[in-house]
Image (tube, rainbow, N blue to C red; front, side, top):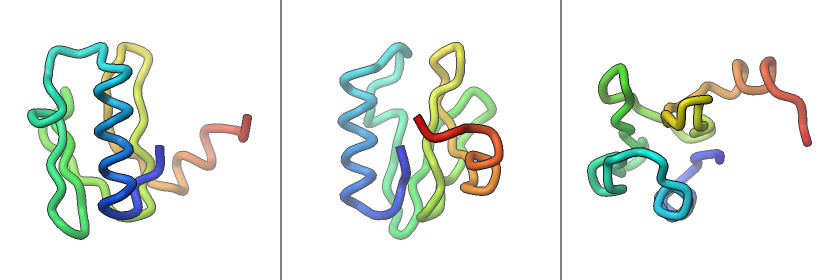
Amino acid sequence: MRFTDLDSYLGIVAWWKEQNTGTLAAEEMFEYRHPIMLINTLEGTMSASPGDYVIRGVQGEIYPCKPDIFEATYEPA
């Protein structure tokens, strides 16, 4: 999902709640601090800036991904 603002943050939180494969509750996983969101990852807390993607890895881990990396790695479905 792409993070852009508070509305997209709320959408990401709702997605996490629906798809949660981890042990952390959404309140422990994400925090919104305008204009960024903080994500607790396996590597520690990372920030997503507006325009970044929030993606799930192969083991269910969640982390931010810069648009240029995302677009070079994935093809539209």
